[in-house]
Image (cartoon, rainbow, N blue to C red):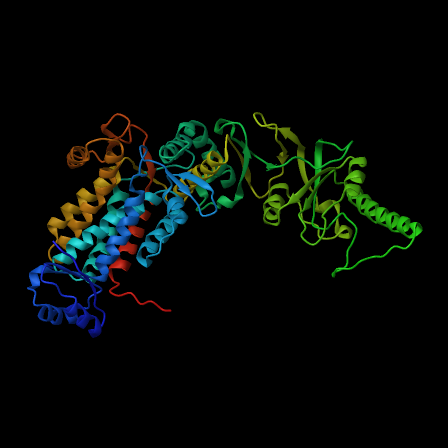
Length: 568
């Protein structure tokens, strides 16, 4: 069967289509064809309407967005495959996190970009379910295509989909179980479910308690009273070497490099008084470039003597304030320190940590209780932070040194996770996985409900929504049924990626939920249906409801677009 693509956005295009007509062409695809030209085209080309397929803008949307959904569908679930990405810079990245994969893809189509943004929104809101939201959106677009072919108006479909999403949210909340933030074991089970699909899933026994403790540590003494949590209070420090099992949670502060010292300088300090300085311990410079011409040795000696005196006076003022640990902020205007200043500070028994990033200053101040000092004259004892012990620590497996601050006042309730890994790829993926795990705990702080995983939540919502469709009349009934069918893509994909027979598994899953087993889900390890609550395979309710809402909003937004306007 022959095909001829005809772009018919204007009458000139129609004339061109007539000229291109061939007798052997039996079917014609019209791209971006306005409906008002349909009869004209049929009459001009002398083809019966049954042989003409109009490829509208909505169909073009469906094709591109489904391609994006299909690209990451194989990454869903504990048995999902990882993606190896080579970035334009030559960097190689391995991940199965939906938001990470889509953010690295060079997506050109505007509608497909909306799916990428949908995944990023899910990452911000819930932190997990970034693959699920795109897979659900892709199947909802399939459902839209079928509904459009039945002659249902896009506005009616969008309205019904919004109602269906609201119904699913209410149904899932009834099926969920409340959780207490003081129940550490339940939180760990939810985090382990999240980590089961990650590259570092074999280390979940270590990373899950670590992620839970890091979040609970910044919630305070009464985590039940918290309504949200700021994950920026947890600092992730990556150190190459060792294995992921060497990762540890430090209830203090860690810098990813050792202290800067000359011969005789201290490397360990007890009862530390910490000063964070933002001025430079080096010779002053003018605001503009200049050259100093020295004509004799006496003048050179005088310049060196004055420079030495200037730096020594600053070091004496630091010592006078009572500080025995100095943190020096990185400077871009001139050298933040020089060998002479390090020599004087070492003689005074002061430990020095250099190159503190400007973005880390606020975190350091909240952790140590210190105040950044912009000028040496404003340095005073009340601006100093404190720690029981500060010193260099040699990491096993690599020989690298880091500076650890232990026994800090920590008025801002912060913590540091020291990540270890054998290579950069493992380190980067471990960082993303721990962040996702912390986001799961944050989701439980926002909405304190747990729901069964393994496709149980989507199957329950699909079954109850299908029952509701039978009680509903009009267009809503057709749309509810299509929406319910689309939700089953999650258990279907989980079974498919696990190497099971998806049709049989989904049928068994429907039967179990119809008999009242709300927690029935797919046990991908044993290859059959089990009660996920008994298996401790649970996830936050917010992850599922957020994925359904965001996927619905994105699909309805795409559905209401009927033309593409390119502004040059």
